[in-house]
Image (tube, rainbow over all chains, first blue to last red; front, side, top):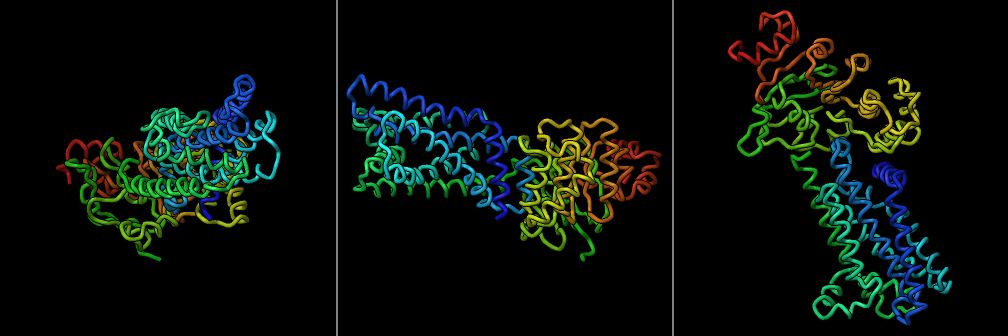
Length: 244
Length: 245
């Protein structure tokens, strides 16, 4: 349980430097409000609160990757991580220590987005609880991806790759548009990535449908496992590397 | 109880064709303060990094408290600590939280953490700033905190890599007194560019030139062998003329 102390530090570091966190919460909320206004003027199914809210919540959760990647990249640039590498913490302690504090932050983002969604018309029902559960696989995916990017890239690179993850994930995940408009190849790419499946699973959960939901969870789950293993491999390499 | 806290055996580190540390062998007794002196790039920090299990040697081995750095690094890690060359603190955490975090990571229980954290804060005179964020401390206070984070785990061996670098004379003297108080109970490996610091604190000194141990001994022994009166002169003589040994 040594990683709990490390995890607590990581949470404090993110919360006490709250600009990025505030941005990560306010941006999807602003988008939910914006699309709800558009939905009133244009009868597009995708812009309706029940469709757009889960998509934009997943968009907000993608910011976790940026928070975590930036924190790890910053730690790497100072001797602080060297001090911890001398400690008895093992690679799994580091990875859990970084991921764990993201869970309450992720639920904070999800709660804020859901409240915004309810305010613009998402019906308040038991499905809200199911949609929260449906976010869990993506929260882990965004977190382990943040760890992986943070280990690989430096502070300035992480801004570029973090934005690519957020924007690329939004476009290919169909967070505010139908991916069929992307055409054959791009649609095939989108379907092979976890973003679309995370969005679809949360939309199904919010509408109370369960058919096909497990298939979407399965795809996101496979990505979580693969990226987690990559993060462990790269963390081990960093621990053994001479570059520290 | 081991006869030596540290024994290095032909410890080497190569980066491609460049040899940073070349067959370094020395022993350090329990409770001894052992200084490693050398010019920039001599290999001091590389030795510290290998001994603290941060990087692996490309040749040789070191036995720390009876365990090999190659075979049992995690056994060693529990009993050592380090104050790196750059100040290694969590900037957004308070002084108390920084120290508490390290104690928790090393596996102390909640009661022990609270007691030890308060004690080390008192011992290192950090009471006035204990609730202040680490990033808002002066350079001297940050160094002091960095050393407190190394001492809180009550390590048997502590590595201090240029602990007083960039500090003013008062802050340096204060840190000397902290190091002196620890000496004897804890084995200390110190690297420094300040000869007077090494002279004031060390039981024995190793002079490293281009990755090799050039001379090991007490300050008096080094002065005798180099026929000088000050450690700084001895160090210059050794670096200018390796034929003296």
